[in-house]
Length: 199
Image 1 (spheres, one colour):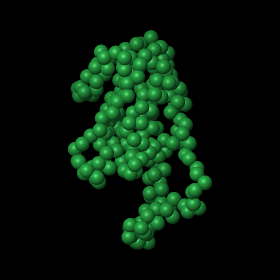
Image 2 (cartoon, helix red, strand yellow):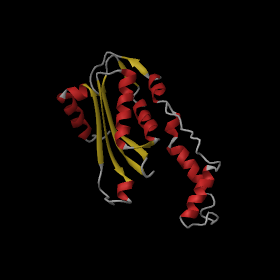
Image 3 (cartoon, rainbow, N blue to C red):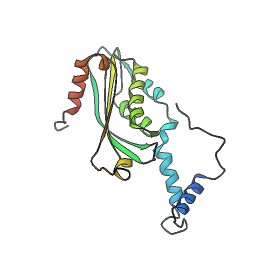
Image 4 (spheres, rainbow, N blue to C red):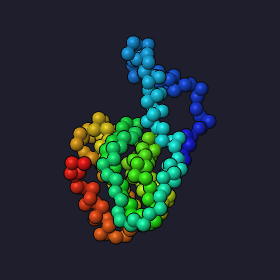
């Protein structure tokens, strides 16, 4: 688990005090009716949006390991993801697709979205998020291979900077047979492109 970093440069100001200072620096009045509760709300929001720092992905995955003889591809696709870009602390969001080929062990299907949630609820970049999901699955269940693809839109590109509203970033991490075998990788990418049929 990656603990929250405590640095000696932290001031004695509370989180709420810091938000009030931001409001003042933006030219606002923190005592205005609509803003009086904003520091408290912002603190609660950030605690929620970064709660992944206090959770251990390996411990979570190990609680749902099952021995099987199944050795075909397992795919969980279109998992909704919301995270905060570490460069601007603005949201990015999209879909995550995860596949692995078991090697004697599987994890409960609900744990894959849970794993995505743990890593996405930290300050992130999409590339690292993709890699962390794949490497955690590889480390805990040691499958024949893992594939992860993330398609996401970034508000730091949509609301500011280049202001491109319809751009999306796609990242992938392929380990084991997904990296080494073109056929396996092609099958995964083909399956995640298929739209659900009334599911």
